[in-house]
Structures are given as C-alpha cells and as structure tokens.
Image (cartoon, rainbow, N blue to C red; front, side, top):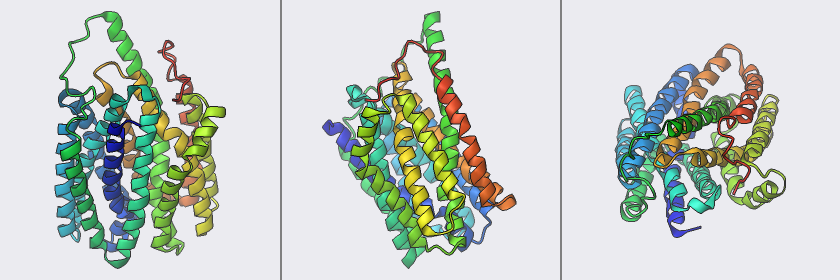
Length: 396
C-alpha cells in the first residue's frame, strides 16, 4: 500500500481503539451501574448513534468542501473533549447521555473522511484501500474491547480515561501527518451540473446507493445486537465480562489474520462485489441461527466466528461500491451516506433489540433477524439496474 494509506490505517486503528474501550460496555454500564432497563439503555445508544449519523453526513459533506484534514481535526477535538468530560462525570446519567451524544457526533465526522481519503489517495487500489480501513478498524476493536474489559474489571472510570487518552494520541497523529492527505477533497463545491442527462445520471447513482444501503441497514441492525442485547444476555447466562470482551478479540483477530484466506476465497469463487454481499449475508443468517441455540460461551464463540466470516465479505464491499458510484466531487458525501447507514443500524438496532428482548425474549429476536436478512438479498439484486453501464464485477 502507499505510505499515505498506511498513515490512515494507523490513524484509524488508534481512533477505533479508543472508541472500543467504551462502546461494547455501554449497555452493561447503563443497566448495571446506572440501574436503567435494557430498553432505556437501547434508547441511549440510539441517541448516540443518531448523533453519529449527523456527524457522518456533515463530515462527508465537509470533506468535499474543506478537505479531510480540517474536518478530521474538528471531529477529534469534539470527541477528545467529550471523552475527558465523561471520565469526570460518568456517575450522572444525564451527563453520560450528553457526553455520548457529543462522542457520537465527533467520532461520526471523522470516519467517512478517512474512508474517502483512502479511496482518493489510492484510486487504483479498488477494494484494497477500503479493506485496509476495515481491517484497521477491527484491529482497534480487538485491542480496545479487550483492554476495555480488563480496565472495567479494575474500575469502570479507567475505561473513560483510556478513551480520552486514545483520542489525544489520534489528535497529535492527525495534526502532524494528515495535513497533506487531502486527496480529492477540499477543492470547494463543483460547478452546478447543467446537463439534464448529467442530472439524471446523478439521480440514478444516488438511487442505486440508496437501494444498496437499505440492505446494508438491516445487516447493521443485526450486527448491533452483539454490543447491546447479546452483551446483556451473556451476563444473564453467567458468562464473565472478560469472556464477553474476548468475543470481540476473536472477531478482530480473525479479521486481521484470516485476510489471506478471504482474499484467496474471493479471487477463486466470489469474484464480484455483489457476490460478496450475497455470501456474507447468508453467513450472517447462519450466525444468528446458531445464536438462537446458544447458552454457553463456546456457542457464542462459534456464532461470533461465523459472524466474522460474513462481515469480511460485506463490510468492505459496500464502501467500495459507493466509491465506484460517487460522481466527481461527491466521494466524501457518498462515504458519509454509507457510514451514516452503518451508524443508523447501530442506532436502531439496540432499541429494536431491547424492545424485542423485553417483550418476546431473545429467541424470537434471533429468529426475526434471520428472516430480515431476506431484504439485503433483494436490495443487492436490484440496486444497480438503473446504472447498467457501471461494472461491479471486479472486487479489486
């Protein structure tokens, strides 16, 4: 990879490591330490994710207008200040909610910029820059979740302090190394599209992105259960908190060390971006089928392994398609849409899962999610019908 992509990979890893100190433990902290219900915890995470959606959209748009560096610096300052405020005021439920809102917004501003930068500084890389960013995110998840679980075993406030320190490290990395990674962003708004045909083409591309993201949303609603309802469910079954954190370590380690196997599989049998989404969605459904029978740590670990295989197909494919669909000058905006959908899934998922679990129980929740995976299959089948001239057959 080019040096610029390596810098982005390091930055993404630091950023997500800090965030992962906290986010897998939010539901546990709100329900057990602050004494709130699962539905209330889901509502708090929904608000946090809604702020993230706003940050994703604004960050992606600002990338196209003022560039990645200034947008990322704005986001990290907001996140860093919020993290240290949370460390000081985490015993107050109101302060906890307000700080999570600010963290969601600041963190949301940064992620689409980093994906857009990766695609811009290595345009010939195809799927590879987006896969590199995805892998770096999951290295951060593995390290952060494991560290957060260990810190929480001593004192929960160590988790909040660690979160702030990681954002501080990311601030200095961005300050000294991101300034020259502008990519194609920051050139200001393009001239208005004048041709009727160009306007139609842009609408067709945006419609295609919307259809694709409808299925992407369902996948994220399902995935979000692991950090919300499933986290609490493992505690009800008596599985230690450190074991739950280990599930995320398994997830991150597989994403890093299984890349050669996934690349080989894709090159030989799953060669198109659409086929990657079909395959990953089917594997996701299998993971939740296993979850419906899980009562011991071994079963949860098996379900996590299956889930991880699925996400290695789906998660890098969607931003790659978005990069291909984006008209000139819209790379940040399109990545903002994709990341806002992912954040939206994390927003809707905890509330949806919390309500389903409270009313119907965990088994019904798992079976319902398996059925919902029909939607991504349909959306992947039809999303590109309006843009037949575009080629999604290549994954690299």
